[in-house]
Length: 417
Image (cartoon, rainbow, N blue to C red):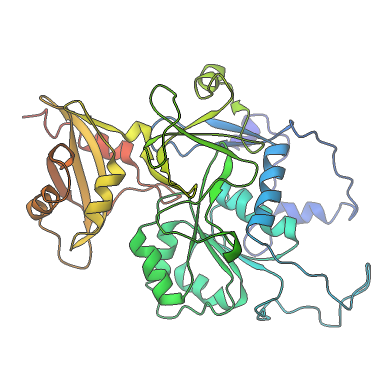
């Protein structure tokens, strides 16, 4: 009803059991279709940002953006596809057809196990376009269920997930990954502990990559061994054709391993935000680089390590504090499952560092003990003024911690009597 009220001409439905108006209508149509001609700059989709640090914005992605990224990832992630040796064009398959339950061999065509939501670039474009462009089979889940997904792993070779999905899969009793070729993680930071646990449990190194609604994929750890080593905690070097640079507050290039602002350019980068020309102009530099809003550093091998969002930067007593650095130390301490570090108003320091941690196992960690442990490891101005133990961290549908919500919840911690 809402769509019709807004003037949408056609609305079709498709249910899990293949019922709905879409397929009913499709049966009345020809099985021949002439693609509509489109230029690279034509608008293909508007994807709204996750809004973890502010208001969501509609990123306008062109057909050229989508195509260039899909072609790059097809090659870089080594999607495998071979033509059936016994079928000429137009020939019928053997009687009975192919079995969807057929187990792939180690060198067979790729099969994607897709359990990501399709309102985000990760599931809608990166995963789906990879399989579609390669002509690969796709095992489709309309929602993630750890037990059900684990049960279909023996039929697949490629899986893409957010960190939360890997954490939940590690809780399953059985993980048969003998036919799997590639596990990819993105959309949120993957804890190094999860990366190591996955390797110990399955023998596979998760490939971490970095992308945004505005840019699709930007960097990736190598897929093939000859292209380099997969390094946990990093998101790899820039993808072919993507420009990546780290600059300081004044826009000057940063040295190797120096923390700064991440900026990118390339054929995958969007043209701007829907009906927000002023915001679009703010987000691009004078020489055409997109300001991602992320903070990171690039090492001597060209691998990018993300430190956090620039909007998450805490300025406490005049000192810059990067939350990801403190979170890394906290997550290694006994009893800590996960942490989120935020800045909240403080009458003396301007902002105070506050950490929210979740327990690992059944026993909550001692908040004062965590503060004492951090004082022995990091500079005093980085040590949280308060550690709060919570059952869980608030997340959006893609598994990203909603720090904006945490800041709102703790805003009066030091200012209210």
